[in-house]
Image (cartoon, rainbow, N blue to C red; front, top):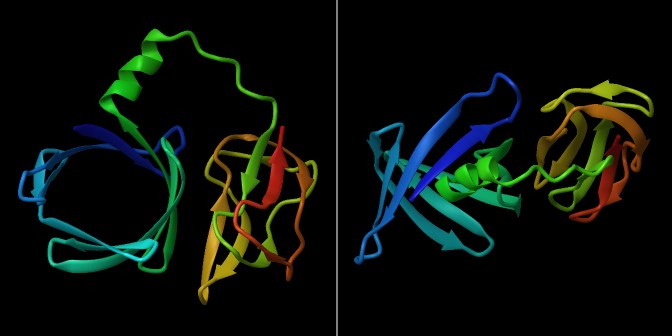
Length: 170
């Protein structure tokens, strides 16, 4: 199946075509932009251990497709993953008006290290809003959409659970 992957979605962000094929043996055949990539995936608890072209990457994901967050090799990424069907289906449906609010939530439990925005600030898609520490790593939590900060729900130094409101945009 073909997927379209965009990291740190924004107007200038490139999108990669990724083709996945599950073989009857359980092996996975992966092509990225028509280039064969050697991949092996093993679930380890709530993480994935992924072998990519001979390099091991421990991967933790969060979110709901098509919007997905991931922490890999100590780096926090936000991306959009759409299947061929989702991509073509969206073009044929009428667009549903979006809610006027965009709430950014904590993707994991952790401690708020820095709050980078304040009430009334304008932000662009992909802009860092909050820096969180989790598992001894600092992760930038970024805006998924442009907007104006309506409310900041946390302060630096506070501990938060997963899925707690961090920032609300309008």
